[in-house]
Amino acid sequence: MPLHWSSEGETPITVHRSSWTDPGAVFLGVKAGSPSGNHGQMDTGSFVLDADGVRWATDLGAEGYHGIESRGMNLWDRSQNSDRWTIFRQSNEGHNTLVIDGKLQIAKGKAPVITFSDDPDFPHTIVDLSPVYEGQAGSIHRGFALLPSREVLIQDELSGLKPGSRVRWGMITPGTPGEPDGARLRLRQRDASMSLVILAAGKTPRWEIIDTSKPRNEWDSPNRGTRKVAFEAAAPASGKLTFAVLL
Image 1 (spheres, rainbow, N blue to C red):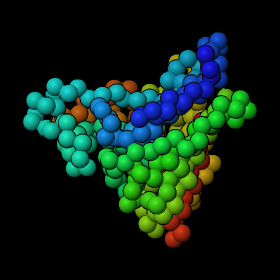
Image 2 (cartoon, rainbow, N blue to C red):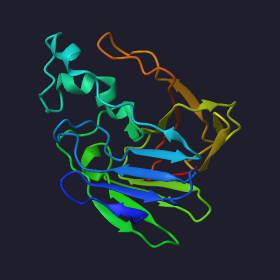
Image 3 (cartoon, rainbow, N blue to C red):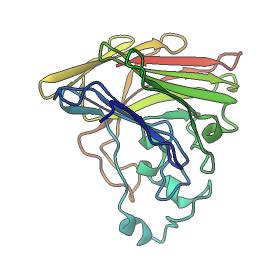
């Protein structure tokens, strides 16, 4: 089986692996496409990450439909103001992707994979997120690379932001975070650990820990044992920001 794979199709995903035989292999899965796809969520640009036999960046999965429908909420409306997007697990806040000024992704937007490489020296994926942040930014390209060192680099290039707009980078994890040390944060899980280092994010970025275990609304399910590790930066006058995180 290939170590690197791109699905193409209506809902593009890509996969990068360091090995099929090493039980401690690194596995990175990347999601593109549109929130308005069948059973879709605002998870465009999100990712999952396994290493050393444990999952570090996780997806919370689907909310139970019966509990939502029994409240009279219109779960099947895919418009921008639908009840569907008030569910935490359906929103971009509930995924490992970007949030700009606390706003939702654009439900009708569709983000393509614009670059996929299975070059063993630099396997990578780049997704054009611009259509799902229309009106919030002019252009957003999100890149993922699996380095020969088994490190993963995630880089976001944003332009056309309104000066002062707040952009949040976030990753939901079952890992237990230590005390943030400036731009560095270490997660622990079982006997394994992983560090996250902010390489670029405007001025003096700081990690924050956001509780995702407790329901946000009475219709949301708990997400026990999880939290979001995140940081924010304000767009400068140029409207341009670069985020780079090394895991």
